[in-house]
Structure formats: structure tokens, C-alpha cells
Image (cartoon, rainbow, N blue to C red; front, side, top):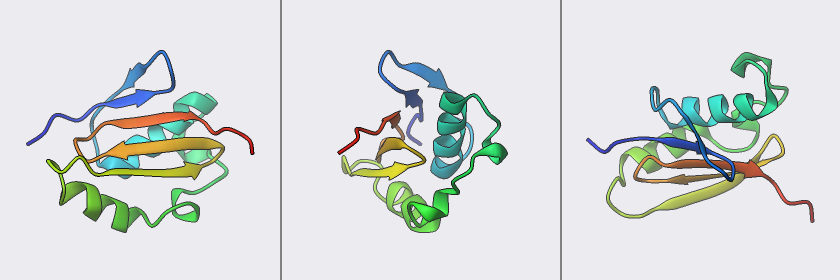
Length: 92
């Protein structure tokens, strides 16, 4: 089993590694917003298919696979090794 960690933004404060990748993403964004995960206005499924993301990450732990997408005003990058980065999305 690979170790999993979540990193929030630049400067990198860590979020607990408990739960699956989708839980870590929602938790990290909620922490950046200063709200509970259930209080987020945007649902993760509005940005990406959570089941597909979970299958991709769980089935490719040693591949270096990286998935990036925008969610709730943040740029989320998930690496197959379990690392999750959440940064404020740049405006076009």
C-alpha cells in the first residue's frame, strides 16, 4: 500500500490521508474555504466523475499518473501515489 498525503496550496499544510481520493479533495477545498465539506456550494461531481477518478488513481499507484482539473475555484492535481495538491485556480 502506498502512503497517501494531501497537500493544500503553496506553503503546503497537510490534510489527513484518511479516506479515498475524492474525500481528500473535498476536505482540502473545504479547509481552504474555511467551511465544512458539506457546506461547499459546488459538488465534486460537477467538475469530474468521482468514481472514474477513484478507479484511475487506485489502479495506477506506481505509474506516475497525474490528473488535473478545476473544482470550486481551485486547481486540483492528483498523483497516483496519493499526493493531492489544491491551489487557487488562475483566472484566464
